[in-house]
Length: 139
Image (cartoon, rainbow, N blue to C red; front, top):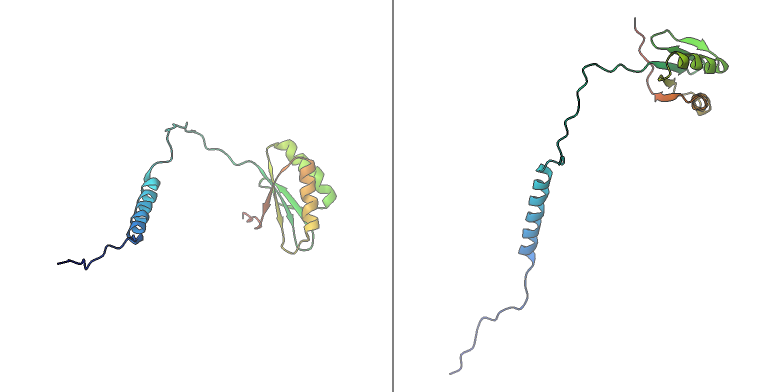
């Protein structure tokens, strides 16, 4: 009497469960790696007792009619021509060498005018800040 096997073993292997395990391990390692502190060495930084003061700021404003206004520190803006701007900024730099020059220009001002002020600042080695909003006037 010959016995036949009814169940045959399939030689193929399903990787579906293995990919699930890999993704679970990947998620586990991603979560645990972010919980680790990135600083390996604790550094004690010195604390300052005095508050640092802001560097003096010189404002240059160009309005939509291409009028130039300038002021140093808390002074009120005064009208200047482009030729008078360079000596004014040089006098401000003599008062405070670490000053910043903030340039405020109306959105309708051509780039040519802005670039001229930037060139003046570059030639005299002034630190420039391009600002988008006009400074608020203190009353």
